[in-house]
Amino acid sequence: MLVVMRSHATPAEIARVVETIAGLGLTPHPLPGATRTAIGITGNTGAVDKARFEVLPGVEDAIRVTKPYKLASREMHRDDTTIAMPQGTVGPKSFTVIAGPCSVEGEGMILECAAHLMSRGVKFLRAGAFKPRTSPYAFQGMGLEGLAILKKARAQTGIGIVTEVMDVEHAAAVEEASDIIQIGTRNMQNFSLLKRVGQCRKPVLLKRGMSATLEDWLMAAEYIMAGGNYQVILCERGVRTFSDHSRNTLDLSVIPPAKTLSHLPIFVDPSHGTGKRAYVPAMSLAALAAGADGLLIETHPTPDQAMSDGAQSLDYPALDALLAQIKQLAPFFGRPV
Ligand code: PEP
Ligand code: MN
Image 1 (cartoon, helix red, strand yellow):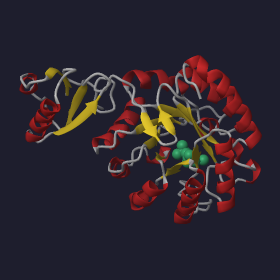
Image 2 (cartoon, rainbow, N blue to C red; image 1 turned 90 degrees about the vertical axis):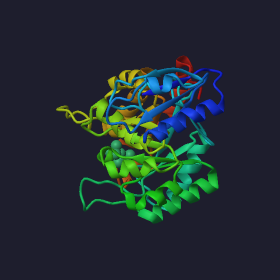
Image 3 (cartoon, helix red, strand yellow; image 1 turned 60 degrees about the vertical axis):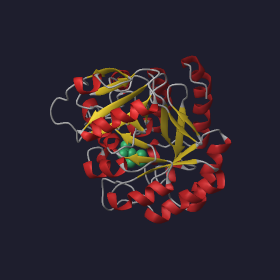
């Protein structure tokens, strides 16, 4: 249920609705909008009686939300969500590029990469300190030492850090080191981890599970939002299909329905989506044209020597060329970069 307040509703009237919801043993989620506040209600197992809210002063309407995901749904929140960070705002009026290596491989390369990205106007560095690898014998990431390196890169350059949390145990350390917390494809339905990042107060980049439907994905976002963390960014990174010409099948067709059903921003990761660096530029531009709000691009100073995902990583000249194309194309879609 969504309680929509009148545009001139007073703070006291809003507070009364919040108290009434809490008094019923339910959870109120005040959602300030451009012209009016709406208050989402979760926690009910059966139908909530609309009449209880319609009679309260300042209430315009009480609307039933038909989708199983509530806080993530466009029914609950008509306006697109924008997320303001010191490095820039994520949302429909901007196009955010996050770039960097798959893994933190050492201090020198991360500091140098952060400086390079900032010099090119890229304000967010991605790099995993905890790596979910298919093989237990593959490089597992530098762990806490890697997080310390990321913090140093942020302190030196002001770049925003995007890094993955793999388990509840390291959630506090990852939250401290990051500006955006990444949940990887393999953990999209790790419900204890989703609940844990729901307690964090940093935005969460939620990658789509490699065999998740849009509804599964939005329900995963709902887990995070139900904990009070409303800053969720969806990230399409390719799904498993019969195709073997690319590592995954980048499902750009999910963007328009995701935008219809949800108000959350959506990014695209063309690196994991294709697995081959040659295909990354085309899919990046296609993502922009399809309505994505940003990109997550693996970049490495020497991709052929990368400790993970080198085949899909751009070198710096290739990233520079792609950034130049994005700069030209983005304003056409109303997204100056
Ligand atoms: C990554 O971003 O390096 C990564 C492991 O991504 P995914 O979870 O999409 O495989
Ligand atoms: Mn990777």
